[in-house]
Image (cartoon, rainbow, N blue to C red; front, side):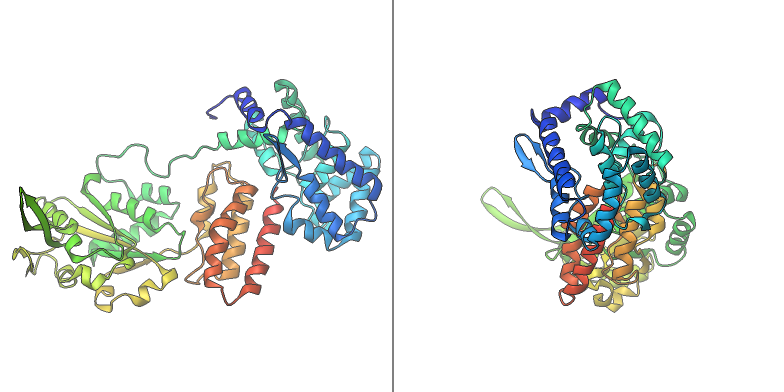
Length: 489
């Protein structure tokens, strides 16, 4: 349920946008009408791009902005439309100048077969109808349709004329009920959509006192239960340590934490540490640490995080414990692990004398070790072979199946998240060590604007680092991603 009422959200949006919220949008819409009335049939590529900028013009807290429908009507999508001015002028003329019923029939034709007006998506045809009669027609932007769906309980898709008519009828009813001006509707419904898509936690709301089942792990990780069972069996019947490895965004840490809750007897038996370049044997096993007493300074032996967990495990042999090592490859592993390379292989059957305390030490058989590694930095290839052969290797790759299962039951735009994910994955290569994972797109309330931010600020800079010798490939992918995202506005 939304955390705020519709009336409260409406008031909030009006306050955010300021006194010129509606008038500024009316002025921008009038400017678009003037261009269509005076220049239609002779619009060229540059004018079509400029028209998109004009459609996006509005004002927020007294400042002019050009992002009303962003990323729709901007960038790559308008450039694509401008690449065929003849088709643009012909189709827009039909939608703008023919009688309303004929224009509606044209819209229905476009929605049923997008090849009729390539790259126009659902927003441009409906925006032209809206400009002709804002009180009667609505603009088919995904965030707006999803926001209205949350208000009415009905679903809306721009696939037919009948579907568009239903959307417009329900939109009019909703606007009348709450006193919303046509120019306010898209902003208010987008905000309502975001409030209505508050994230459901991916982990249990309450920590359970004991283990969670393999079925629960699978459900929370959006994996097949058979996969979880295979991992658990490999750890329980063979080497009791494993590394989850894969590109960024494949959920390695999330999966490791949940699998630990399945393996450990209790959440209190799970210890998590993150390796980094300064992490040492002294932090992990044991080392000397300074201690002051009055004016004197002395060095004492202090046990590391893994030694402490081993002591707890040895004292409770009927319980299971788990050590999670995140970003395992960021430390000098051979130096950090030291004699653990030997002890992990001969658990419970071998002891060594520790260098600082001179204590006899062994690794109990009731401890599991789970690490995570990022293949984008060739972590497995660089891993010391002696350590590598003592760890099961559990790959986690970019997986649209995980993304689909995550989207089930959510108000997420499945077509958007799957479409953009697959485009990038297939272009980079599903098996490429740097292929960005599905987790980037597993964000509640992700609309076209949010997807563009993920691409702009997370994935494009990331790929630019690895494709520095392939600028043309990155430019083409950038154009195609933006075009695809704009299709969902």
